[in-house]
Length: 304
Image 1: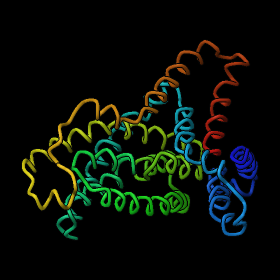
Image 2: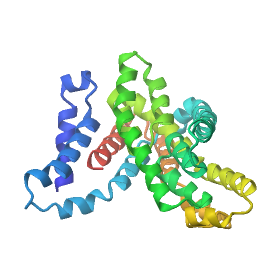
Image 3: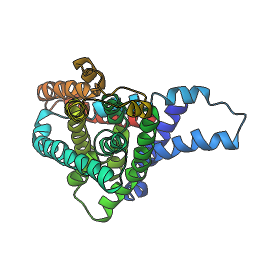
């Protein structure tokens, strides 16, 4: 009930004309209200139990992924921005990843595994990518936690900063969406950031993020081959530092486990819309379907 209340209040506040013009959409209010309730309430009301609320809060990422699935559009729209999304995601991100890794290891003399984990997390899929790659490079839990913390800190900042920078510089909504989708980590943060700008920016950001996420398996495979080629043997000192063996066998099952399944849901939902919308063209049902899906998209994000 608490999540539903936050969702309803966020959507109501986000529809305010002044808030909309100021870039303060429902996503901002959902995040702020959630933060206030979960953090401030324990300080103000120490005897007030939020057990049920916290249990549901653990499913927040699932709700946000449901929201992204419902961001589905017809394949004709995907065709419009598809190739640009592929270029931004699968060309720009790997270049940033390699640059970040080289800066970390050569300029700042960081440990190899921490450098690659932070670079992967910052340029690809945040904690999901870090977790997947850490299993390949054999990072210790301490290094994984450190990498996730660093990436999460900057993600929280840039979720708001990038959106308002795009508004300040008068960036085109589609360009802003592509920029946010390719550079802001975590699916939920991408949607939240782009939602500050407009629905069009959110749509483009979602497409770019999905294209980026779909390449996670390819990324992990490439890093696995590179890592195993680079480090064929491991000294006893390395084993003590990492606590794991970096020469673990790599399997297709691991790829499937690390692949973000909501991408398949997005494709399935887009397929349904592509088939159904032309059949319902110029009918009341057809006119209501797309707005209904978009409303559900906002609702799932608001409660996430």
